[in-house]
Amino acid sequence: MDRYHRQVLFPAVGTSGQQRIRHATVAIVGVGALGSVSAELLCRAGIGRLILIDRDFVDETNLQRQALFDEHDVGTAKALAAQQHLQKINREVQVVSYVEDLHFTTIESLLKGADVILDGTDNLETRFLMNDYSLKYHRPWVYGGAIQDRGFVMAFLGKGKPCFRCVVKERADVGTCDTIGVLNTITHLIASLQVQHCIRILLGRPMHGLTHVNLTDNTFDVLHVREDKNCSTCTGDYPYLEGREGQQVVRFCRIGQFQLFASPPLNLHHLKQRLQKSGPVDDLGFCLVFQGMKIFHDRVLIPAEDEKRARALYAQYIGP
Amino acid sequence: MKIKVFVERTNQQRDMTIGTKTTMKVLLEQMKINPVEVVLARNGEVVTEDAAIEDGDTISIFSVISGG
Image (cartoon, each protein chain N blue to C red):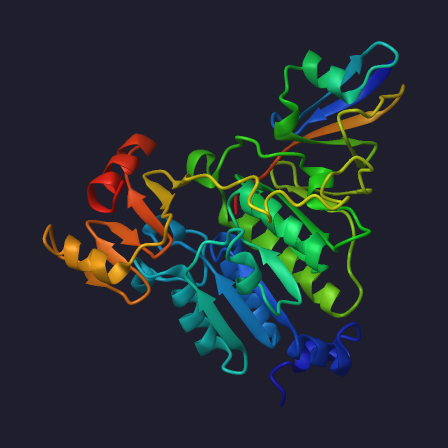
């Protein structure tokens, strides 16, 4: 019997709906608590192609909620670990993975061919970037955010519809999962809703509204959203996509880890030779690992207690 | 004007009395809430801080969520 029999049996999907799912490409930006669950659900649902993008590596604190990973994955790049697990779940799905940071210089190549973009990120900056991309290239994306036991979900369908900036106006210094915590129940719930939005978009029947879930008092609110007539992004201004906003040289990733962009790009071959004079260098092919630092051609992940220390380590080992 | 205000951060709803021609922005100032940190809804519809408040409105103030 066909492995998708149970969902094909559901009339809203049916054989033609399954074909649409089968021929679709979905990009998942951030393969963490939301993205890993979304990836698994879409893989099991028989999506045609998945593009996984994540800059980070699995650590022990991820295992509480990032269900695709296990203890053996700690230290492995999330996109690669996810790809390995997903291919064991469903070989029919084409999975491509990128251990990269999504920013204005990489977004167009990384998201190329994606019919829908799923948000698995942990920051507003990348969401504004995806929102700019969505409006400029008419690609729908599905926002998901979770913290503690609360979350938001909304599908942004492109030009002529409300955009993320109609809802969230600018970057704000709000709490992160690292600083105020998160339950695995809310992340699974929000990711499941994101996938439902995604499937509905692929079936040509998108769902509307901003869903807010609050598990403290067990409430689901679906808020109506209109286009904000004063929204600059809706009228064609794309500051994140054009690199005029959001390009921080140093980015806080999580407690004890910072990311510094390398400009101009690093020559990893030469750098490896230089660093080997100071200690062992592990060459993973796509990055170098040196004293806990993960060095890519365009960025460096640095374990440090604060930004100042991260900058100092960068200057000491990578360059001025 | 009498309104109901739900603040998701504290998970509390309260009845408030405000002056006429009050906007969301003024309400946030009174409540000492930073507007960039919240999503505002009036009677179940997302609104900007420029939106006017009317008698009997139910206002919801949700924290922006960036985690994932």
